[in-house]
Image (spheres, each protein chain N blue to C red):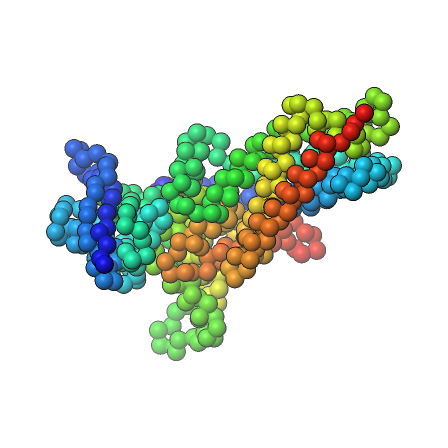
Length: 247
Length: 226
């Protein structure tokens, strides 16, 4: 028998001076294979056209529909209502700037993060458009791809206790982003240069290892292993710089 | 992230790395000490002679006199280092607790337990250390050894010392076991594959140490000190 779902949705439009933050309740009959995206679309079409939420791909690729679902950051399009209880509470992602209701602006933060980690290949090599593209061994390419699968939904940052307490923390998304360049043989940055970007409390040494990022990542990126690896690598880099025989 | 963050926030330095090393090393050292401490004190379960024998050995060799201050320094240093991450302001505390409540996430709650237990351990652990170390250096009238089963039992039996140990014991065991697990995940020793198992080991360890500690406390409470 189909369940009747009760949605409690955060409502607030910062653009509207008359708007105040509050929760609205909606009741909806559950249908087969219903996702939160489908449910929210039906609420908007059938009950409340003013409801704001982000979506684009509807397939867990664009990361636009991230929201807090019964306390956990996740993707609306990825989450089936069948996996949730009848009472569903939806909040916008914390940490990011609220656009309206469930929609947040993750773009500004990610752009800022890209600038901070200098998210581009650093090389002295002159680009020759006529030459054949340099080959990369398959294993390295796969390692890079594994980290490049990040869809920038912001769930890891919203779930991060450190980021919630200190806004300048790079978060798992930022650290994972830099890790991708550390693997890339085309990037000629030295370990010291990488250290200068993340070897501080705004970077890897700010991470408290709560691993909520690992547990909420909708793409199941290997964040726990990546953060552990980066902490060891950066810590060893600092250590070897004071050992006289390692200099 | 504030927009001005693109400008260098500070001159790049290595201090954060060294402080993180020190926090981990003092933590690991204190974990090892706490395991040894509990096992040695729990020797009283085999009779007061067993504990007095170990205490006597540590004192006659000078290990206790030397180790005591080292532990005290490591204890305070570990607090100062870990305090870099402890939410002290009420704003941070509200954020941290609100975040943990929202997330329903075990590891986030484990960290909150560590933070709260750290503050209690700082106060009660300092009182405990001060007393034991003064017993060690100054001695207790009518007692030959600085540390012995009878002195410990007499203290545990005396209110409010009883309360101090009833509170300190479980919090210290929790802090140590969670700390052991958290060092593992933070430094990548515990990998994604092994995390579930490591957490289970952490719970079993905390339970086992709590059981041994409680049995030891009860033994002290029931010991005839006259």
